[in-house]
Length: 154
Image 1 (cartoon, one colour):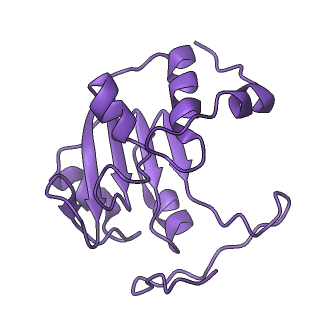
Image 2 (image 1 turned 45 degrees about the horizontal axis):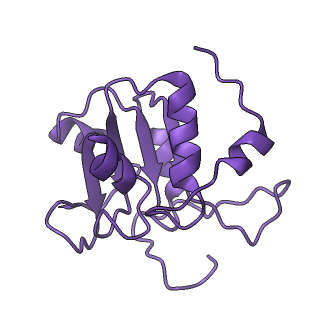
């Protein structure tokens, strides 16, 4: 099915159950139009897999399955992995990930570089961005595998 929702329709569908920016409602609206597929997600930067999670609502209320990863997980359902542009495809293979319906990237820095490295083609992708920049501005940090967020805007 062809995706034909406008920006205004997506904005109107915003709803937070576990997310912080309306993503729960937007994701539900998108999948209600394109179909759920295999109901499989991958989220890295997942923390505890619930608080401020883009996939918790799908997992808890809609019986989706998936892979949660974080460099410092706060719950046993989240795999302890440092996701990098160098290792992301090996990690997906390690956990036998095949068809991704929803991919969520939130690693506070190298997000763009990891996204560019992924060989799989997810159906829907959510990538964190820095809202301090305008929509017409485009910035990315230089790739640095050792980068970690230091509670700043970098």
